[in-house]
Image (tube, rainbow, N blue to C red; front, side):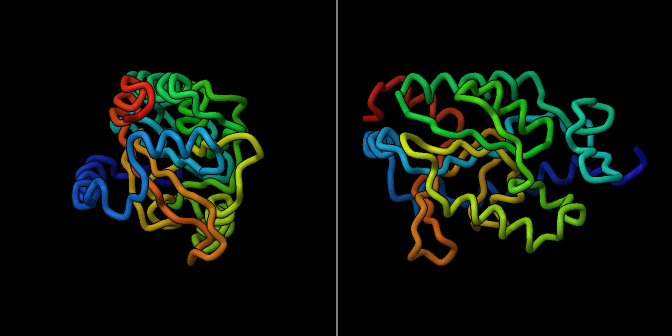
Amino acid sequence: MTGFRTAVAPLVVILGALAAAVPAAAQDALSGRELVAALRDGGYNVYFPHAATDWGNGDDVDAAGDWTSCDPDEMRQLSDRGRATARAIGAAIRALDVPVSEVLSSEYCRCAETARLMDLGPVRTTRKIMNTRADDYVGGRAAVVRRAREVLSSAPPEGGNRIIVGHGNLMRAATGAYAGEGGSAIYRPDPDAEHGFVLVARLSPDDWQRLAERGTGG
């Protein structure tokens, strides 16, 4: 492939600064025991940017679909730390008895691998969840944002919550919130909200572990 390759080192610094600038509890409506109880009732969309990656590699994309490659010489992949984090998050969600009725992932290999390692159910990849840096291949930025908002504003299949594994840049573009690699934001569909959903919580990977250790989130 000879297409674009992201300049990753400066981007890590920029994204870290942006994440640090957002107060951890700003706008968050649920936490601890109350959050766990709500998730056990189902009906939420839980968005995870993929877990930690090897920033020594970039993305080479020449055509739609190139991003599905799991070759680290072509596309940035999960690091060993990212794989361990994905497994730990999934284990925490299972330990909390949070029901999952659907798992969606971006087609990017690093996202699909994150979703599979979480082991929360069959993973369905979709272009409704897309990296904004490749939006030219799938209809442009406005279309990418619109499709993501459609997913976040729709109720999960009955009986659980929807797990979404995508990209931090899409989260910011579609919702205004941001979580770094392996972080998460939880949204409740709400037809009266501006984009059809509201942010109720943000959790780091360690937050999921802490909730699981407490058992009920208290």
